[in-house]
Image 1 (cartoon, one colour):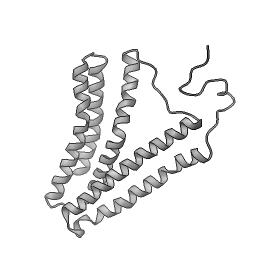
Image 2: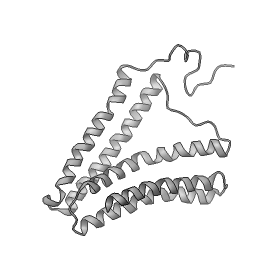
Image 3: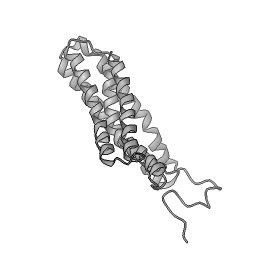
Image 4: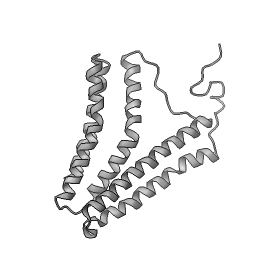
Length: 192
């Protein structure tokens, strides 16, 4: 049941985000679009409430509860950047906005980008682990929460694997290819 709610929340995230951006740009209903975009975090509250109610109702914590905590952590940490990413593309396509920024390809900008993304993953992990520990305390029955302890290790493993990218880009930074050498780095304009 809880996994179905997680799937519904993920679908709801994209539907509300899409509706907000469609209202904002093609339909030019800026206030309506802004109101819909402000509703995006409410989807996380629905999932949080469903998870708490399920546990308070006597359910034994399982995969769905751990997945809900992970989903909430990553949604809170990465949600704003996903909304910005989508907004840039809609603004460019429907409102003559500047071209969307891509991730830097090399140099210090790429290293900063990778560490910033790792920082978001660390924040997501901290939030998810905090939620898992809160669920364990809330239920206060080791037999019903044993599955949640395993999720702490899983989230730690995801973060450890994620750390490979910023570390590798720091130690062995990507350099422009010969064909890219004539182009200015991302974020720079060619001198006139």
